[in-house]
Length: 262
Image (cartoon, rainbow, N blue to C red):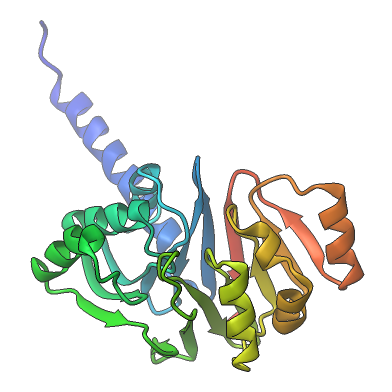
């Protein structure tokens, strides 16, 4: 097999460096908040890149393809997250959270209270094996990036028959995104009775638990201007959203939501 000439080696090396540089440039902070909706085969997640370089992931759905999708978003030269948020602790969520802790450097993780049974043992072991700071949202919590943007969590009342869940709200300037997670009707009603402020300008419609997240009580509490879905929305639900004055945006293949922070 003939060897490559020095010029060809130089050309290939420069090409690789240019590809890496372009990937890095595309992900650099530019004074705006980039919230990328990752549409997964069975659920979805939101990757947030702050103007300061802070990187966050809100994992609304558990899917192994998240690891591949996340690799397209995090920095090529260092897979790390400043904050990982897991709104629900179903068995698949526990598995993917444990996997992320083993593969990435995660500074802080925000989760609902861990189940008391052995179902969360794998996650407990993964947490103890890392230096990740774990914040348990047994009450409303706020994560402030120090530059005017926050992530808030609102835990649901615990039910013996359901895994722990919480509503997550990302706020930056005058914009906010509410991610309802997977809550049962009884949990949602109890949370709303508590008087918690879950208002947001944008509502991310879940792939699971959609009837609860689009109930009259919840839509009135959130009062969004825009609802985003990664699935096709039936005509009755489109009419329902329109009745509440909510615009609908379908992002079937995911995509980027840029929030002004100039």
